[in-house]
Length: 224
Image (cartoon, rainbow, N blue to C red; front, side):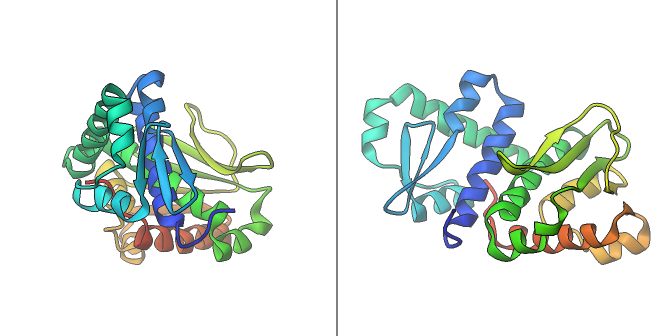
């Protein structure tokens, strides 16, 4: 079980890794595979080790210093990690909604699923939803994600190419709305009244998802 005080940086690391798996070949994306270590440290790709405060600084300002040993022992791999982080940070700042919104949304959903698995209150309220499936869609694109529970891995999100049956669905009107939602900059209540977000299926499940999403987006630092 992840300590809740460390959950924000763990969710951020999982989000970044999810983006990396889409953007980069497997061998490069593996450089971003996170691991929580003891003594309030986190590693990326078994190479760079950051203290929790330094990793948070890295995400929030782009300036975070890893332990010097990883830099010296794996200079090329360390360069790859920093290069990947820089590229992902650029995407979060990009205004090209149609191109990058699905990727940013994917990262946000990964962070939310991490909270559904490890945040005490979030996992409690989703305890009765383990047989349900939630779909997240972006109109004007072919973007469809499914969030479901598996006993081996807990709640997880995956991209699907075809429409599948789900217990509930949330659809964003266009990529620009999806991007704002992924960055925590969308007034969800206003978006519902203006038709920028469409809900269908089990509304109580969607209410729970929105509640957890707001917690995660308030606490999880975004890459810069």
